[in-house]
Image (cartoon, rainbow, N blue to C red; front, side, top):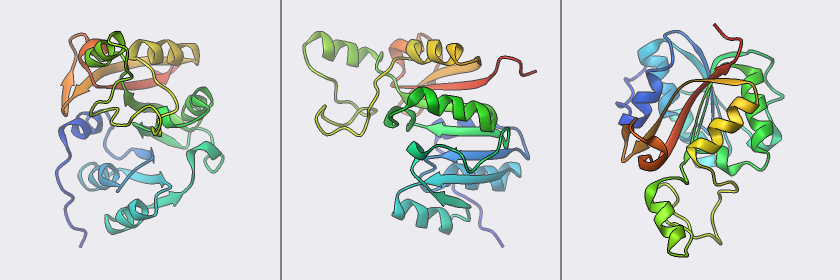
Length: 202
């Protein structure tokens, strides 16, 4: 008997609410597989994760999640067009070299995409830059010289990029300390979250 997964963090719960019951889900950079395990148990979803870290792969297996070990920089050639109802990429989009190519792959393999990333437009980041220093925050916890993040963007930047690549923005919000921020999310959200669909989607 499959054990019941732990309750989701509030931020993951807000994202999981977008995913319909019995959907097929691809989670890129899935970590320990918590989101996929919850979706499988609570919503009857079918899912697969992509992860590169050995310890996280083991955690996925313990959570009963199917996972492939792969570097996201290698693309998604393993998956056919429109293979999934939803593709999820949480806080790893800023770590890939070819961000625009990654977005196009999300669009190719999924009917909709949910992406999140540290929001460089968050007010404390703006203040830090105004004072002459790169920010170090909960969402961006690294010094400029040792960060795994290759790209820094604001909510507005990614909105523009998504539209330029044929996405329609179905919804978006900010996250701060696990809570959803809908009032001025580009200013008050540490993390930005987008729900994207192709422009010709129903």
